[in-house]
Amino acid sequence: MGKINLGSTIPVYPMPVSLVGAHVNGKPNFLAIAWFTMAGYNPPMISISLGKGHYTNPGIKENEAFSVCLPSEDMVEITDYCGIVSGKKTDKSGIFDVFYGELKTAPMIKDCPLCIECKLDKVVDNDRNEMFIGQIMGVYTEERFLTEGKLDFNKMKPLILSQPDTSYWKLGEKIADAWSIGKQYKNRNA
Ligand SMILES: Cc1cc2nc3c(=O)[nH]c(=O)nc-3n(C[C@H](O)[C@H](O)[C@H](O)COP(=O)(O)O)c2cc1C
Picture (cartoon, rainbow, N blue to C red):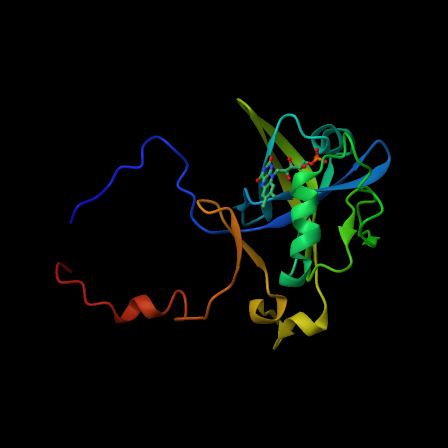
């Protein structure tokens, strides 16, 4: 099989897009990010990677709080806007209806099917980026996005980013049960 080495670059596999919220200069600000991942289970932690120049970063540090909200497909335009326009030049504080949980400086977006409220745990300086690792204090959704009490991504309709062709995609179909289908695998060496 002829493999092609794409070089020393980030392997840009599909990633869900989120809107990260923070208070900056006393007002909510949101930016689009795709670089986020779960970072711990107990206590539950999440990590986001932000370029150092963004308007949002000092606000997260000052208030030690941020949110990660997953927009739905129908929010594609406003999500992209938050990824193009900086709070440094344009006031983004009024573009969403926001709500708050326990932390009063982690603004969350009412229209998003899922919002994660985070208390800043640590900041990792990573050359041109800062990784903010936050403890998850609350996860907010609505009954209409659940099936039998569990988050249902078919109902939430998250936005997926394909970076090689810089485009938004929607989620595909379920193909198997995780932590389950592998039990059928016949390992010839076992
Ligand atoms: C689809 C998309 C994904 C993005 N992902 C990231 C990301 O993971 N990390 C990052 O630092 N910036 C990311 N950006 C860029 C920021 O959202 C953008 O620079 C934004 O205007 C910064 O806003 P702020 O200056 O108000 O904080 C992304 C932009 C788009 C459109």
